[in-house]
Length: 151
Image (tube, rainbow, N blue to C red; front, top):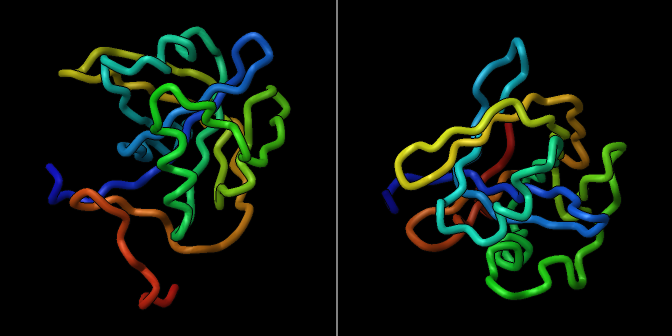
């Protein structure tokens, strides 16, 4: 599957007043009416069990060149929010300053699917923070989109 490019997002919430987040490489739109999105979490994730009981979460879509931010949220045992600028959404979920688009979601459903858990969120609000090309992961690294021009 390394030959299939994937979008990259950071899912965040708060647990006990503390920010929690993880990187997902499997974010997609599901439905426009109602507005539903999905992402998948590995069953071996040590972060998802902390987030699983949250009713809301923010999906932070990263722009091109934000690979370092993405990697920091996939590091095990590190304080993923160290040095990261963020503000709280109305629901208290972290909105990353590095994000280009943020979707504030309520949890719609979860279900096991293969070696992952599928999480579906209903979009409550969408914020476009800046127009930029997306961060895309392919064959073990982030694509270099410097030569592309947005339409």
